[in-house]
Length: 206
Ligand SMILES: C[S@@+](CC[C@H](N)C(=O)[O-])C[C@H]1O[C@@H](n2cnc3c(N)ncnc32)[C@H](O)[C@@H]1O
Image (cartoon, rainbow, N blue to C red; front, side, top):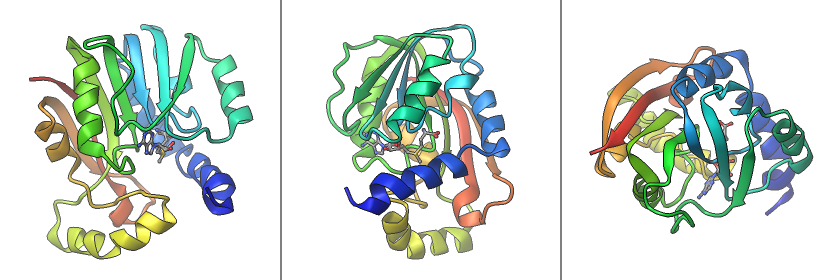
């Protein structure tokens, strides 16, 4: 990894995704989390303070190990035990079928290269009665905006270290065999529309 991807990008991420508007969304999306939880794309651990007391154990998976000291300090303050796993979520996950009560992604489905395979694995490891909680940015329903998202996506993939701005998050989740039981679609404030189209919701196994 280059200097930008290793040192600069993780700092931009932590700053951009740690703002009060994002924190509000973290609180809302994580409120139903419970039991044994798998978070895919743990990043710098910004979700940790928002997990409710109903969470017993968190498995925090990411392909990178961004800002290890900062993340360790956040984990030390977490109210539940946290086990970190470093691997690419686009491959086979090292967990048994139906082992998690809750699976979580926040601002992550945009950047997993093998997102279809990752969603299939997330479904496999989720218990039949479990819930997949997500808050993601993605493709606009507005044609003009999605046209610009498609045009600028190649540039965004470079600047955003693999982040895509044009993924139809709800359709990807449904295509993986989940049923979306709750979906809120809105624009995050103070962010250009290309990046602010948000999908926050809950999905279950079909
Ligand atoms: C935009 S950051 C979001 C971090 C965190 N979820 C948050 O809400 O602050 C996306 C995260 O997904 C991780 N990621 C990207 N591709 C991945 C993959 N294939 N497998 C696992 N993690 C991945 C990145 O390393 C990064 O930490």
